[in-house]
Amino acid sequence: MSSRLDEFRAHREKMNEKILASDHLGIKRFFNLDTMAYHDGALSGKTKELLGLVASAVLRCNDCIDYHLIQCVAAGYTDAELYDALNVALVVGGSIVIPHLRHAYETIEMCRGEAFARNRPAENNPMI
Image 1 (cartoon, rainbow, N blue to C red):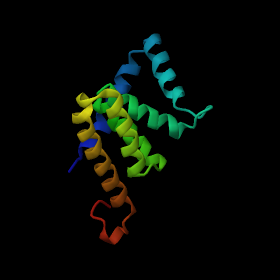
Image 2 (image 1 turned 30 degrees about the vertical axis):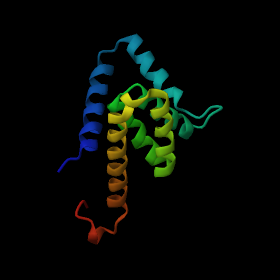
Image 3 (image 1 turned 30 degrees about the horizontal axis):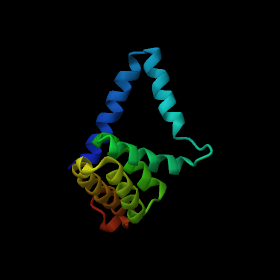
Image 4 (image 1 turned 60 degrees about the horizontal axis):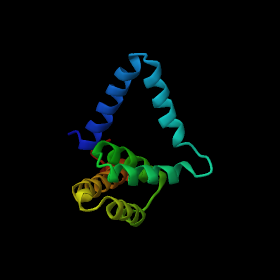
């Protein structure tokens, strides 16, 4: 069975391919700018992903929240660190962020579940 995150990843990849296939110079430049913004610079890429998560929560973009949480979990952030960052988003964005905070907490649980399933021994893992 496909999870919400699997569906998100597949849809994002499919649509990004379609968008880039349009070969629009402005769109391609923006996608490149977005990609490069998260590379290491004066701030690490890891830190920039956490900033992206906070901005996404304040802007109330669940797709963006999912993307940045996937990246943040892969980068090694703990739940406590993610919750602290999401608290900043809540303070900045106000109570209208609460539904997106719920979404973020669910996504964190899903990411941790995927990581657990990947790290279990093969004989106990029905996913393998």
